Length: 396
Image (tube, rainbow, N blue to C red):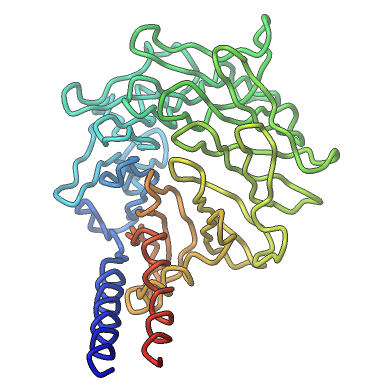
């Protein structure tokens, strides 16, 4: 009996040590000023997107300046950040140093965004080999922005503005760019009367999602493939006139965004059949929610939430449901690192669901980007579940 007791004790200690190691593998840190940006009127570094492999963060930082004679200007710098270095991506026009990175390929080697070219914001593609390059000729559009790239960086989506912003409908169109065919506007009909933007693309570059702006008070989420064209995604109710698609899973089967029901935002996902599912319906934790990103297969979703005037973040697992992202990270042993932090925005998650980036208010009261790394959920759950089972066996 004593020998059996020692065996169970050793097993318990082994699991306990494994769990402790697992929790210690979790991490949370503010990214700080990734690029030296001292002085007044500073725009803190803003993390906008994460590569699918979780290794590269992109975004922008900058300053508000008054040294342009024509206007009060904002100077922003697109950046690429890894654990080893932070790199600025340069500008299309050295006299107009304004650039923002919005998306990144799976391996972090291709970055997309918008940069000032003469007086026009222009969609760009960046790689280490080519540097920053415009996706179209100067002055071809009023402006353009690139928001996402396929896993290999060879297909890019975004929007172009073709007419001035005088009255609605403003002529902005979703586009897709490839190295072979260049920039092409995604059209719903032969007369190209579709107004909207493309916000994200699947890893294989075959499925694009975005939002169609029908009127100022009526928006519809859509997906697009070359075979099917533009297809409207269903809403929760017939009278819901606002649906938005923000992102798509790497495998192209799950789309995430939000719908408005009685003027309240509700985070949703659409599955591979186009069926809609609210994420916070059974026992609502938040007043309003919106889903911003998902892992490769759509089983983990992150997003933003509001309780009254307070902004926060959430994480959703298919087998668990929705929960506060802060509480989730604290349960993984990150209470100390999160002390006095308020996580206000979550912008992206890696394909494996283990790395998350966003923006928050740090202990000093300043806005700062952050990155969180978490253990494999299934392994964590298995180990934590094994503890009481092992304790139970010790009693016999």
